[in-house]
Length: 210
Image 1 (cartoon, rainbow, N blue to C red):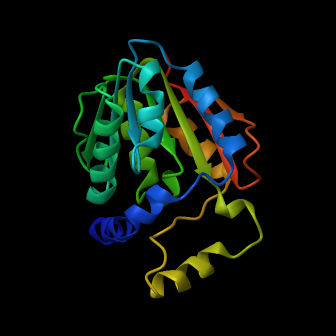
Image 2 (spheres, rainbow, N blue to C red; image 1 turned 90 degrees about the vertical axis):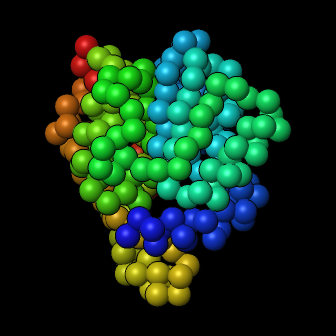
């Protein structure tokens, strides 16, 4: 499963890197909220970093950002951008949080998951891993694509697209599901923030108890 998805993302990495942000206003609001939870010495984990745009832009506001993605091509492009921009406090690595996490427990002050959890198999396990990797009081910031919050049959549409190699595996859930799953692994102070991204996007800030 993961190797198939990695191949898909490898194949579109260059096009993905060149594609402009769809909703600039919403993205700017997401970044502003994310910066509220950063300090100069913050250690951050980003899962599903793509070509590294978020991590690189946020790097001046953090101590060190560890960003990971399943696609080696995405990581290659991210490292190129890092070198061009002269950023020294971001580390990109290929990988996922499946299995044993490559970091020590309670290592991070903040974790980010922008538009990735709908692509993750075993989402509950991944949320639990993120929870365990955060320090007490750490923040988890996620932008969730909630395809189950609409009448459109996205599951069937995506299945057809996959037949033609035009889509990765996508898991359909609604906003109530993702908020419940966060509570179940232990997150508290779970707050959905309005960013103007539309009804299918739930931008959520949650905390690990102190």
